[in-house]
Amino acid sequence: MRIRRILAAVIATAAFAGLGLTGAATAATPQAAPSVVTPSECKQGGGTPAVNEDGNYCKGGTYNGEQVD
Image (cartoon, rainbow, N blue to C red; front, side):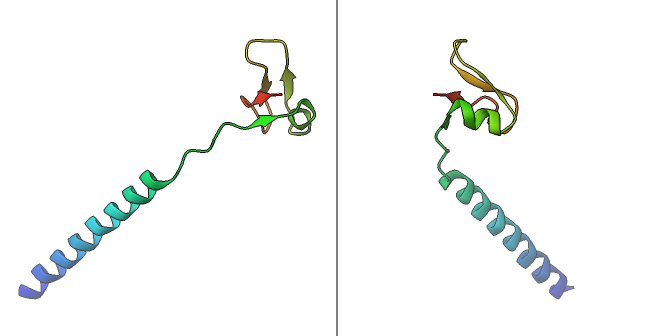
């Protein structure tokens, strides 16, 4: 009986420690800066450069939503 309680305590401690490490790693990860692609890169990624529209963005493909320069 005593072994079960100790084992449960060890498992619970390990689980909480794992959650703490996961949260710390997520919080420490920097956010990526928005990338700027050329119209040809947008086309190569399967998208359509929407130049001269609001914001000049790539529509569709790999770079969907990225700014076109």
